[in-house]
Length: 155
Image (cartoon, rainbow, N blue to C red; front, side):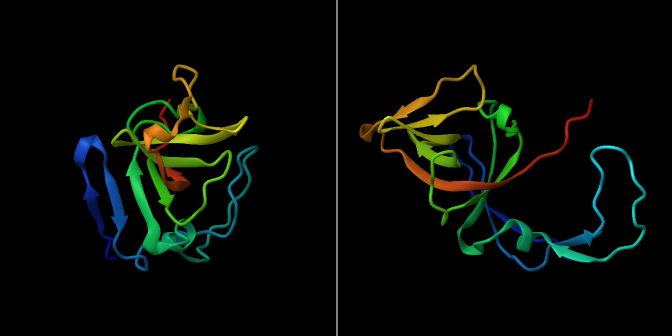
């Protein structure tokens, strides 16, 4: 099976920004039965179909990008160092959205919070302060995080 090519768009300033080039070739086996996260159950031993991950992960192909996370400011939202974020630039930011924002010439991922008429970029790690956004900052919401891809931690 041919793998979906991923091209690097920007690697400056330590950021890794990727755009998926071809949205119709990445398919993996899909089992229709569910997996138990509680008590084990007998699994069906047959393959039902193939699922196209792009159809599952990407709503707006021309506006969807991937960014790799560096840092720990969102670790309590299960966005850890090394995770890959699927980001849709067409989605509108709302209070509580996790967004990729362009601030002070670099990307950051934070939760958008609106309180008392002010806008904040809130981390998900108590070791980091929230950022109050002012007009002077020129902050831009670059896109909304729709999925987080990361390897499970090994105990």
